[in-house]
Length: 195
Image 1 (spheres, rainbow, N blue to C red):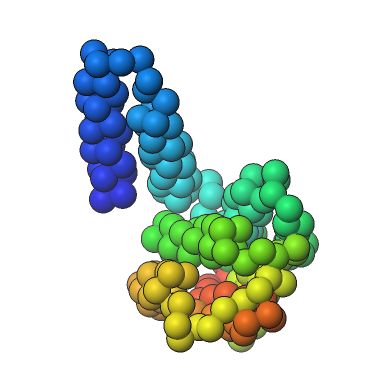
Image 2 (cartoon, rainbow, N blue to C red; image 1 turned 45 degrees about the vertical axis):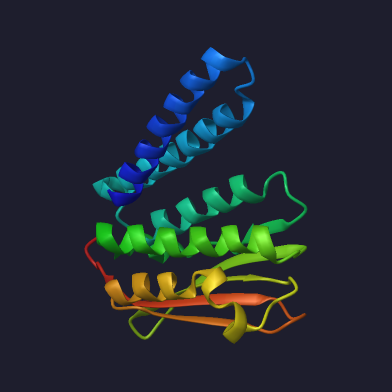
């Protein structure tokens, strides 16, 4: 809600600036690009919100597929080769609360965006597995890595950690300079045997 409101405010501000600029000269390119960027971000946010509230999308399977679709779109025109290992059909029996789906989605969207922006990787992969009443979702790339202690803030690790804690999960980031980066989220699950 806060993110959508913030972006709407920015859109309104840039529109007002564009209108003022139009009176002085016809060069509106900069403002219009900013409007477009914020509008796209707002649209993505609304889609994610609606998706996370849709009861038909309540399984772990649907959540992983959503992440795959996001990754396919994000890396499509980049130099990175993104792939997802096959999803276990048993994930259809694992229900996730809307709040859990939302935070899982946001954690890995941030991880993928960071990888695209900073890693200079050639390959990126998404993997998921279940073990002892938990699911692990892993995103990793073969990029340049970084010093975790020096660049922690830039990679949004605290934000990811906060989101994981809200869904009783645990997140780990493994990275070294020259050895790629791995984000691993572990959350408790309940298998619905009646499905």
